[in-house]
Image 1 (cartoon, rainbow, N blue to C red):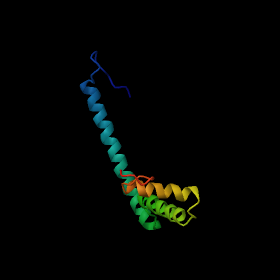
Image 2: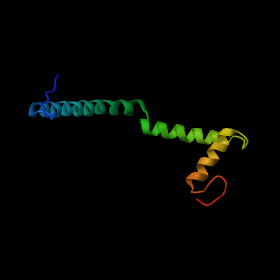
Image 3: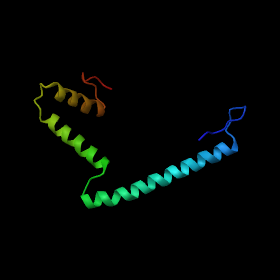
Image 4: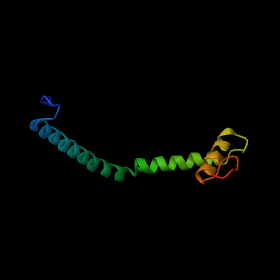
Length: 94
């Protein structure tokens, strides 16, 4: 599909209408796909992507937390935690 532009590089009325039609069709496709996916997730007892990512992050955090303090990954975790708490790694005020 070709969208026409006039001499001022502004989209023509026909071009705008076509883009609206494409956007509307895309939204309908996404809604249809989601409506088909949700029953499958319920039937198979699958978690949403958001929940799976959250659970994996928590799992990795737990593994790193249990490492010995001399391991670089544990030190990196410690630095992230104290920086998010508003402290500097060298104990100077933020």
